[in-house]
Amino acid sequence: MLASRRSKHRITARVDKPKIQIKHAGNTAILMKITRLLFAAGIAGAIALAANAQSIPDIGGISNADSGGNSDGDLILGFTNSSVTSELLVDVGPASDYYSTTNALASENTTQSGGALTPGTTYTVGAYVPATFTGVFGSNAYTSTTYWGVVGGNGAGGGPGSEAIKTLWLTSAGSALSSVAQSTQSHLSNSIDGMTQNASGQTPVGGGSSDAVTEAKGNSTSFTFLAGSAQDFNFSEGAILGNTAAAGSGSTTLELYELQPTDAHTGAATVDLGTFTLSSTGLTFTSYQAIPEPSTYAAILGACAIGFALLRRRSQSAAMGELV
Image (cartoon, rainbow, N blue to C red; front, side):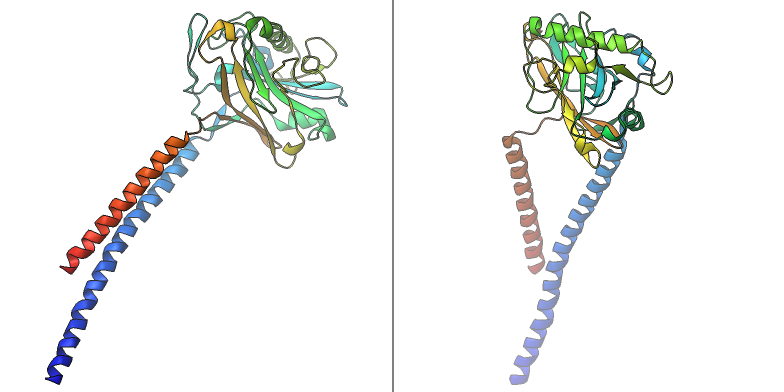
C-alpha cells in the first residue's frame, strides 16, 4: 500500500507540472503579441517623424515680398539691438504658409481656407540663415538686449488667405494676444505692411536670392521704430518681441497669433497658429495642435482599462481551459 501511494504521488506531480507550464506559455504568448504591437507602433512613429521633417520654403528673395499673388500679409522676422546700428529683417513668407489644416475661419465676406501644415508638426523656416544674423549683430547676437519677433499686416489688402482687412499677425513673448476692433488695428496693420513693402525695395544681404535686408533704425517704417521701447508695437495686448539670450546655447520661443478685427469677422477672431523656436542652428515653426480636454484623456484611459480587463479575462479563460 505504501509503495502504491508513493507511486500515485509521483504520477500526480508529473501531471501537474506540464499544466503549470502550459499556463505560463499562454501568458508568454500574449505578452509577445503586446511586444510586437508596441514595436510596430514605435516603427510607425519613427516613420511619421521622418516624414514630418519638412520645411517652409523661402520666397526666393526679399524683392518678392508682398508680390507674386501675395499683395499683403507677408511675415517679417525682425532683430534689433540698441547698440547695433542696423536692424535685420527677414521675409519668412506669406502668413498662409503658416496655416494648418485646422485654421479655416469665416472672415468679412468670405471663408479663409485652411493651410497645408499638419497640426503638431515642426517645420524648418527656410528663409532664415543664422550666419546672416550673427554677421550683422556679431557678439551682440545672443544677448538679453537683442530682441526678435515676427509681425505681419495686410493693410487695405485682402491678405494671402482672404482675411478681413486690417488683420495682424503677431508673435507674443508672454500671454496670449487677442483681436481688437478694426479701427484700433488699422494703424499698426498699415504700418507693418508699409515696412514690408519698403523692405522689398532694399538691397538684400548676401545676394539677390536672399530674403534678408538690413535697415537703419531711425525711419518711421523701421521695425525698431514700430516696436517702441516696450517692444509691443504700441499694441495694448502685450509684448510682441522676446530677447535672443537663450538661443545662443539652447533655444527661445514665441507664439504666433492671427488677429482678425473683432468687428469685421464672424466667429473666433483670434487664432493661435503655432510656435517659432529660435536657436543658433536655425528657426523652426511648430504648427498649433489643440490639447485634448480632460474628458478625452478620461475616455482614453477608460478604453485602455477595458482592454486590459478583457486581455486578463482572456488569459485566465485560456489557462482554465488548459486545466480542464
